[in-house]
Amino acid sequence: MSKRITAIILNYKHQKDTAKCISSIQKTDIGSEVATIIVDNSPTKTNRQTFKKLFPKADYIASPSNLGFAGGNNIGINKALSTGTDYVLIINPDVVLPHNFFVPLLKHFKNKRVGIVAPAIIHKQKDGLYFGLDGKVDWNLAKPKHQNTKKITLTNPINSEFVTFACVLISKETIQKIGLLDDGYFMYFEDVDYCLLAKKKNIDIILDPKVIIKHNTSSSFNKPTGKLSISFKSHLRFINKWLPLSKRIKPFLHALVLYPYLYFLWTYHFYKYGR
Image 1 (cartoon, rainbow, N blue to C red):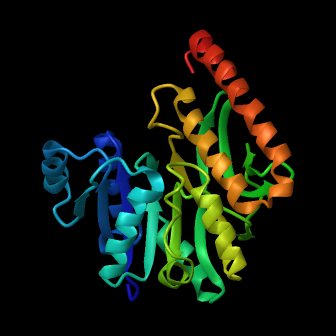
Image 2: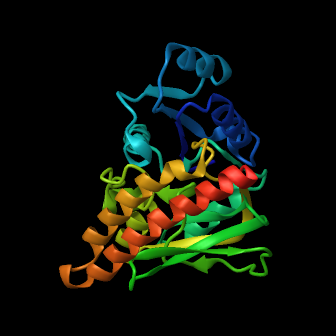
């Protein structure tokens, strides 16, 4: 492999998931050549010892506190850049990769305009399995809309407005042009924000529907409602950052109604159906 790739896995109280994720990286087409950085947002002496024993070549970084998705990954990105990496793979610990992963995704970077590349994601929803693709922002409500489908019929790469950062390859040049993730978002919306900044820099974002990963969505939360307050705060930040004052009223009102509604709906489903 002529280019250096560094995978960044952000651990938060999910040792088993993180270990499974790293193992899946190592089993991919060129996984044995990929450097690994574990950023631990829930560091303990036991965590350090366990990860060092399982993955002696990986860099283990104990975060000073739980810095969230953006803050934690930024620690890893800085470390990766300092080692001379060419590409950063941001990957959630609850993701498992297929064998043919890096080689097909890296081919897209031959186009010098491309700076961000992501796979399709298979994940569970209450009524079955879905494939997550890319997304677009509904600017009327400042609301990102992800494309989910029960069957993938597309085979050609999709030039996207944004992709999820549950699993994404980003070139060094892109990070140098845009900078790090906005750590004002503790979790959620930081990937949409980063992709929009990339678009402003005329950087292309590609979703490859032929590469499919498995993602256990929101495994960090014991109850689905646990993420709503975090998402709400991030949504407000997104509205303030990307819309002029005159266009914020409707999105604000929508958010103020949406999140309480989701809380009561998800609470009902959780206690009635256990999900």
